Length: 397
Ligand code: AMP
Image (cartoon, rainbow, N blue to C red; front, side, top):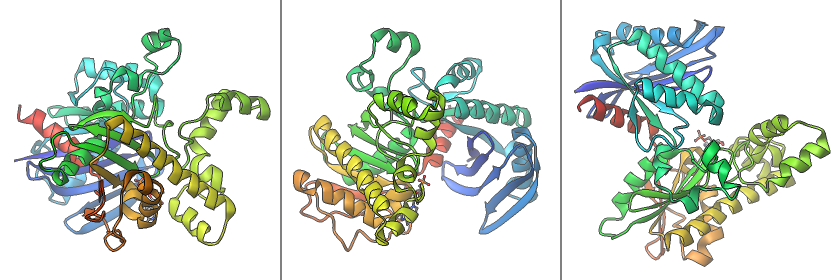
């Protein structure tokens, strides 16, 4: 038995979950928010209890100290020595990492060299790692990459049709994201495909960030996000795929710089941009019900982009055995799931059972009918447990 921590460090936040491994029992979880401020927030949940404190947390090292001290104070661990490993989510692993890797100088240098591809994220992950190393110097640290699962794509699926020199010299290509989630979903999804020879899965991680992945024999063959998480289907505030001329044209029309427009494509587009209501799909759906024209259009765009990718991946895989819905919208919105299936049902022979496609409250469920040509399931994703598993496997090596 070993206590393993899964960590997601952002530029001003640090989320954590402590597991007893290999049982995968969650001992506690929590979050430090507004790191760098006098009025930062530290929250922890354990054993059916929860606590939230407002206090100064000026850097990530202080946040880590708070996490470890809170665990000792609340009797979750009796000393720091009980924590045997820390797994860190890393957004961008570039071409270097096709699996999780122990943190060492080489790993650190590579993550650092990838900062231009994920400026906010990779920098924050390194800050988080260094903070843990300072407070828990004798513990193994493992980097778990969002891009690793997608490294099995073939060049036809990841090379962009730009001058080839840019691909080789600047490593400008599709890397995808949400890989840890898609890997988890495909592993759970295989339980529904016992006896299927070469299982083909289309996994839809649809939350405020959203991506779709085509998986054959447990390996990613194609994914919708691109060089960065801006690509693919429309999202809460991101455009998804666009004709590249849109950037040039709109910069000329508005007088905005490329950087300003890039921020707009990332933070003010998608549901928020088209609906003018919100980036939150619940607000958008409420506005749809009130007859708001832009909200109606934004929802139609969203559904159609998802259906387009499912169709594309059906062809890419040579068919499909399973479609998975997951993440905030995929897990919680029966209406969105139905609207997506309505778009693809005539072409693919998919049928949803209205009875089974209900509010599942975080439960996994098969929601297709017996006659459906492709099984459809809802699987709550769990990236943290994947981080804990990979970290534990390094610990016992
Ligand atoms: P995530 O990024 O996976 O946390 O997902 C966040 C998204 O899930 C937001 O757009 C939420 O509006 C959406 N969401 C959460 N619960 C529901 C729900 N019951 N119905 C529709 N969307 C939901």
